[in-house]
Length: 219
Image 1 (cartoon, rainbow, N blue to C red):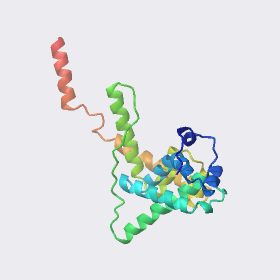
Image 2: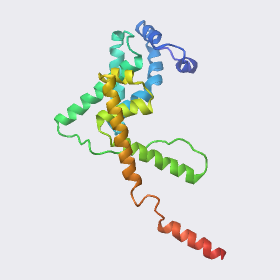
Image 3: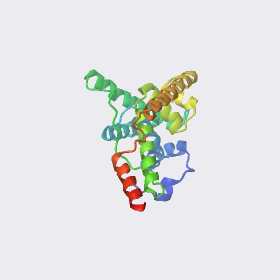
Image 4: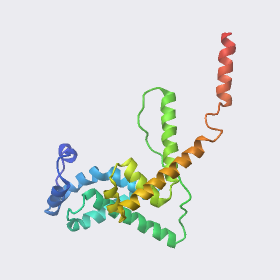
């Protein structure tokens, strides 16, 4: 297999259709470009159905393998990303159905994976606040029912338009709009319930002790 140069892999100007044609002509190493180009959107799509990182990675790998084996079926009638997401969603749904048949799935349990957070300025308090905010938002999204969660992630996180989402999920555009509206309302309610908790912004004992110590020392 020929090695790809970093410049080739990161070249944003090579159209997906041309890459597919070249892969089908024998340059299978170019499939790496498509993997790197769509890893993020595929991860977030599968993450809408599962939270276990090992399982997400397994589904992503299966998706890419299936996409490669069916690459000759890609006609360019839809964007390659849409075609790939469809395969990823089907793989996720197949896994869910298998779990349900074995009565092993519990969709009411939500666990956030450990992950790296965005590197914020060195201010420790700002960093902690941003990390906690990201955690709360992700936790709230995870609590959305599956059919609303995937649409919210594709629209609000990935920035896909309603027509593309409808194509991915085999829904009408109006149905996508309705589900997105409901997802936003449910998310607002969840966030409201979290922020209305009287324990939020609680001035704990350690912080109280610190203030007392400082003030008493300086009076």
